[in-house]
Image 1 (spheres, rainbow, N blue to C red):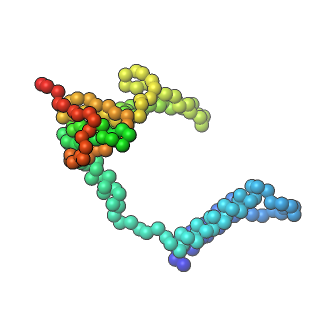
Image 2 (tube, rainbow, N blue to C red; image 1 turned 90 degrees about the horizontal axis):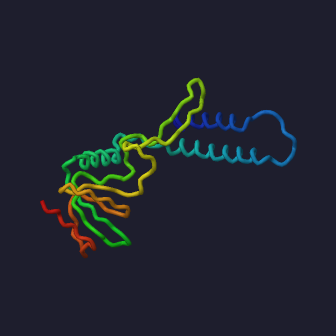
Image 3 (spheres, helix red, strand yellow; image 1 turned 180 degrees about the horizontal axis):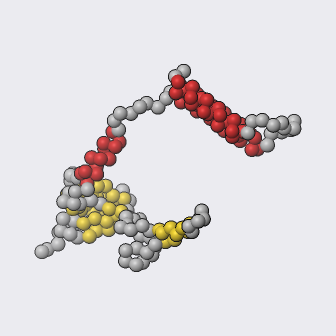
Length: 182
């Protein structure tokens, strides 16, 4: 067993001893539900310690997930980025729109939606709803919004698919977007 494995096993053993409060004597009676729960927790902790020692987590030197998230942020945080959103309802594409920038959540806010008031010198605080930037309170409906290249605002509260290239569709959408006349 590696030194790390031994350290993990020892730490889990110490924690198990602290949790179960080893020591003292008990009457010969049925174990209490608390004692049974502690025994079960100790068993799980011991199993976990053995598994960690036998199969330690690998040391990762490169995160593909972080790379993907970084690429996504770089690609879609460009304000002039052209994308395409397909709005879906009951399994059918209802509309397809070109999107300038990106699709955003209706529940994205510029300011915090809660304020915490602390009683300094005490350990308690009170969390209250904060007004939105327009002075109103409440929550938005679930959904998304976006702007077309012609600066038309569109809001949708159903399923959607977003991509940065148009897709070939086998059937036409039920709603067809026509760019406004200038």
